[in-house]
Length: 136
Image (cartoon, rainbow, N blue to C red; front, side, top):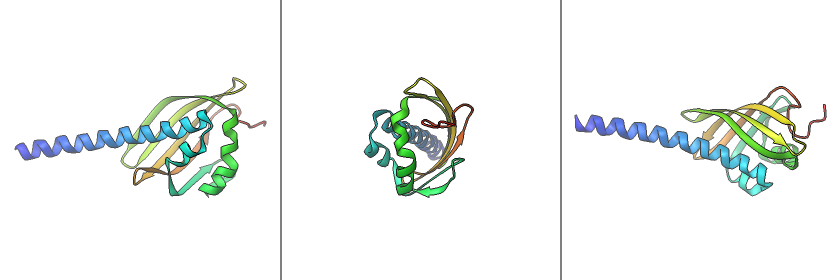
């Protein structure tokens, strides 16, 4: 009986730890955008990282992600997380970005994780300007 109880407690603890780790990775990733620190972002991403968005980004690799998406960091002022929900090796996030000109961008993203790093991000643009720096 003790063994079963200890096993259950360990499993719950491991799931809670994994959830905290997902949230920690996501928040550290976005903090890199706020601080304009590429190394902070890159440190959260796996070597085989891919990014997908409605902006003609279909599972682009890290080098292209840096080229296309990193320049938008100059428009990031603040990120506020509305919801982070995780399950196993994935998480779903809803967040708002306040831009340097005080516009609000609302997006949702689906994350997958591997070996303690972000393996992929699929971004879904919300209403408004879509992403920081978009002039459409």
